[in-house]
Image (cartoon, rainbow, N blue to C red; front, top):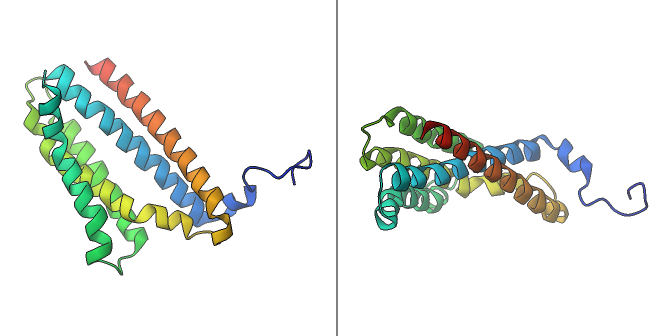
Length: 175
């Protein structure tokens, strides 16, 4: 019970759990990077390069394909893989995709520069999607999973908001 006699929305002791905290931090950074990428790349393709909505969507297909393959394939083909290792490799792939994209940007860049970065980012996001939720939920007893789900959603929304705002600010400055 809280100071006024009611139960708190979130038991603060939950955050003493290092696995849960690690998972929540990972969710925050996944959605920060992911939302920034999902905002910046279509905007770059449509505004800076003048691609139509259809052409922009086609350039994003590699991300969708590798995301789907990784999210479905990792649990199926590597059922004994360490979730921690999968999450680490997912972040490496996502970050590598962003680094390759940023390195390829220049004044004469064409839309083809996003293909390899989108493949890498999709692989990373798919790997994260396949394991990260299980990491956070398994860190606490089943009775507390509802609270964890709520905190997880809050953290992902915060990461996505900051990622979109950051990407927008960078794009506005650059363009």
